Length: 302
Image (cartoon, rainbow, N blue to C red; front, side, top):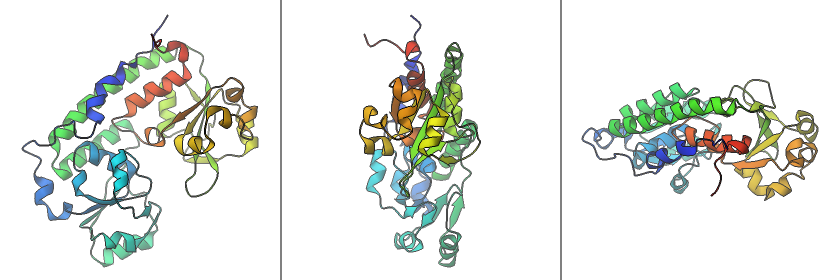
């Protein structure tokens, strides 16, 4: 029996456990000496994961509501949803730097921060793997965590080589139609992840076809649309999945109940932050999705 190469997951374990990377090298003193980095408010979940990965989390004093990873980030105060921030909440943390990937609002909040003298730094988001790796390297430069960033990047690049090698294996099977369902946090409805996203690229690497073929952002889903999309597989992010409670209960949702995915019991759960942007966990996330889409290629449990 053919086996799906899940060894991609194991070598990344050290790099992804916060505190495992090199946090004490000689070039890591910049953050301690730079007053601008003393109290950082950061409102990008991708940037925040990278800050923790390189061991610079002690500089963070607050984050946005969507920054969930790593789990210990939830202990920090939040300043609101990144597109609906509170200037008062940010200013109350006495920040020395406001860090964002540009996906932030409202504009009036940024104006208020400038008026009170809070420095604002915009770092380009990593919309491709290469751009995401450049972002991590730039954060290593900013916080003086060069050794940690270099170590993580080297392991991440090795993982991506395994991802590309496994793509040929996935291509040997018929491509399933996949609907990625994401539960909106500000409104009580389901969204479908369109193509052209990080999640869409992960589907491509795993030999899946996005059931929503339009490009960019999210599509609001109705029961009629879900039924019409007729996905073979549904991957639901954890907020909505956990609210429903189980694959069996999810399969009974209006519209979902009419899909091949529900009839064939091919409904899966995944953490949102594994899908919505590229990072050091991307190779492991691709391996996880690959096992969902191609169970015949997965290793047996013996």
